[in-house]
Image (cartoon, rainbow, N blue to C red; front, side):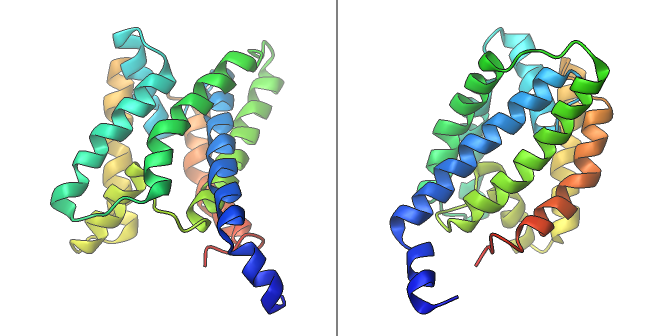
Amino acid sequence: MSQTTVSRVNSLPARLVRLYGGLALYGAGIGLHVESGLGNDPWDVFHQGVAIRTGVSIGTVIIGVGALVMLLWIPLKQKPGIGTISNVVFLGLFADAAILLLPTPQHLAFQALYVVLGVVSIALATVLYIGAGMGPGPRDGIMTGLVRLGLSVRLGRFLIEITVLAAGWLLGGTVGIGTLVFALAIGPLTQLFTRWFPLT
């Protein structure tokens, strides 16, 4: 890759496209999982559970939880960036739009397709918006903050996700085969996409 090409890829407009394109794609992935009815990723099990209990949309819960989670950044000494704020504001809006626009599949084959497309979308979206280098999402920031305190990335992520998964399930969020597929596939798929969209 030439120096000129690298400069274009790392320019502010290109980074903004990666950021907001990634957030839109992430919202679509959430919508696909929710509409599949086969189980959400851990955070969205929690978001859905809170939405069921409060009567507001999942997107509204995503925005509210994101803002509250950022308060935990203070003792962890994490600093937000424009990507962090954008994640809080826009991810829930994109998720609600996807849930509104996507048809609900009635056949198991299409439900399974939604799960697969949802995991792929979220993996690619994660690489895009993190690769923009404009700050992690609020939920990612908790994990990196715990890592700074001495926990491994694997343990930090496990503790966070098992906590929100259990809480979301108790609140009525959907846990199922889609949740398991997400847990098994999200890491390898994210790693795969970094070959085409490097994080640095």
